[in-house]
Image (cartoon, rainbow over all chains, first blue to last red; front, side, top):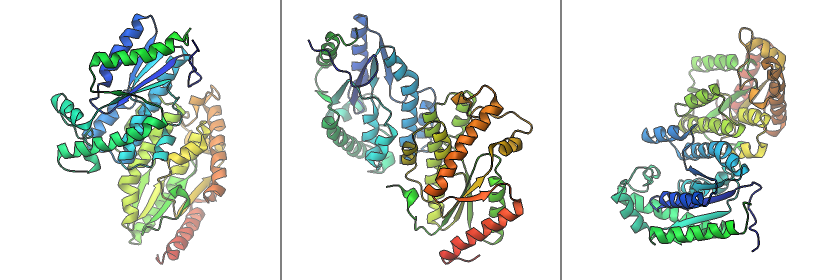
Length: 223
Length: 224
């Protein structure tokens, strides 16, 4: 078998799961982590907006409604760069499989929907290494709506209320998530997403993801 | 592409002062503010790293030495963007004279001195309006250090200790601030910063600054 060619200069493997809110990313990430660890691979997981430096600033600012589109973009970029430099790159250098819940594609989708120039946003994330594999959980908006209403409920930013599409939560969520999906659809091709039907069962999705990662591992890339 | 290189055409007037610490820019901008207010002008003052949103976080992170050059740069950009969108932009639209103690050029000087890519950081700040008057206070690093460190050692980031240039904070300060000055020097041509000699007297500098501002205002058909 031909050895997989990594997309970056590091020892490890970079795998990203993308998708809108409620598409099942964290569930899949957890399953993937367990199955890889079971095979004795070193796995590191990092989620969007979790840097020790900045994550609670974002939460606090959102709660107090202090963010405009530009500070929103820049804060998320700061969070990302902090995690990139302190967790992601060190782990990749040591040969870990790094599993990421969201990557800068999330920022591209959300920031562009908030009116930012896409080139400006791309520049913010220019230091991000290219992932070896990007899974995208594709979900229709009506299914998403049901999932989110049934679990966490609609929140202000996930519904894009800050953008001012509509004062009605349901309507705003629908418009906002549709616009995000539009952006994701544009990126699918550009960044070579492995798109997976998010309405499939948890097990089915896991099997597809595991299969894709396994193909790369079986080529001996981490030996 | 960048607003920093085109005229803003808003009713207000944007003035900024730049230079390393101890160059006397804050003294001058305070004098300018008092004079403008006394002359009945609508004036707003804003300073670097002072937004409600993030300045406390940045200060805390600095204390703990948690910042890489890129996160340092992004956090200051957050601070600037917050003040830009909430204060500077609206005030310019409403016809105010906005006085900024440090502007995007501070980021271009400091961040690049820390090794951040010059084009990257210029792109980050591409949303910022071009000032009508950008003053650069030129001072040598030794005089700057004598002024601000007469009774304390240089602080970690102001001395560029994060770059491990020297274990001695005084020596590190001189090396790092020399790099910052070099970046400012380049911007005199690139952005048309007006260079003032920081060693001139407070009085003579203030006379020069008022003259420059009068020129800018009269070009807009305003008198003072």
